[in-house]
Image (cartoon, rainbow, N blue to C red; front, top):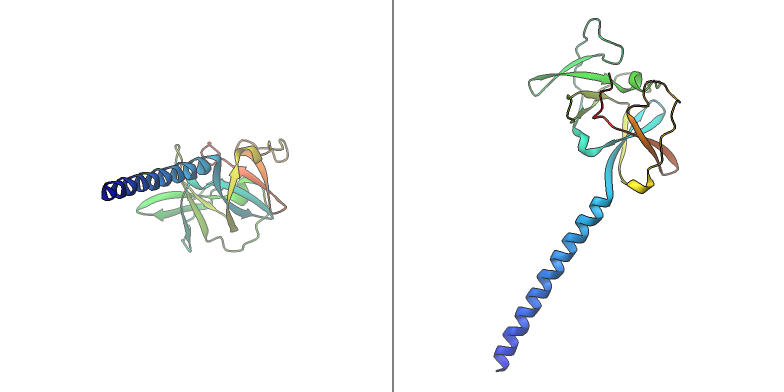
Length: 170
């Protein structure tokens, strides 16, 4: 009889352990859903955040081939995995002074309209942002870029403007 109780006790412990693991996994998923992850980039003297799920890859030292008669915000194209991608100069797009002489840091975006390589001055960090922490954007500061800024958040005493790269920003 003691052996039967011992087996029952082991079964209950196992079920409790499995239920606990399942609960912990559910809590982790719930906590991850509360936050969005952003990559903080430097463009000029300002910091911007791009949703991590809108970035496919970060590449360096890629030769940009100039395209004649292209707008200033498109300095050229790159060969990316046997596909030609336009390079978008974020300094021109966001009307920010360039800090880097040679722009070799490119973010390959992933969105529903098209892929592009974003040329940026630098990377800062990955941050987790709660939706309730996002403040409304300040409109009208720089005409033409309001459509890609979705809001702002304070990170380490610095203002970070959040960008939506899924919109048509040409």
